[in-house]
Image (cartoon, rainbow, N blue to C red; front, top):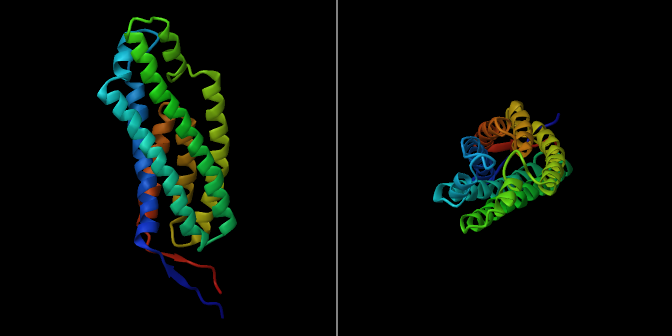
Length: 222
């Protein structure tokens, strides 16, 4: 007769990963909401430049970058957790593809946040030509290099989300719906589109909190 073994995971590993994922989801909601309510660079470049170099504008940008770094850490913690509880290859694939996708998105938004601030400072310094750079770094009119990077990040994240979703599903200690919310939330966050990103962020918050609450992982019967 098969018996089920239960492995109690360290609080700092199992729960920290979930809270980091939830934090990343919350920062994505804040970031996209701020961008949606911000100044249109095509209609008011000076207002956009002022906002891009303001404490609030830079603060929101940096907060989102910190959230993406946290998401990367959350994915790694989730991998370490799931590797001993389900299909380790699935979890490894999830952290590789998901981590690459999130890392690429981090690079894109790092360029947008810092590059946008630099271009805004140049514009405010009486160089009107810098407005074209601001337009290329603003949502809705991303330069094709940035769009290509986002597309690659999306493809990688879809692969990582599927693999992680399967691993969470097989872990047995988590409600299976949390794997679905996590996978969908990760993909929607990377899409970087108004409303869609907010929905993805909310799904990651819900999934992350649920993941953070579990105390043990049920291993396959031995």
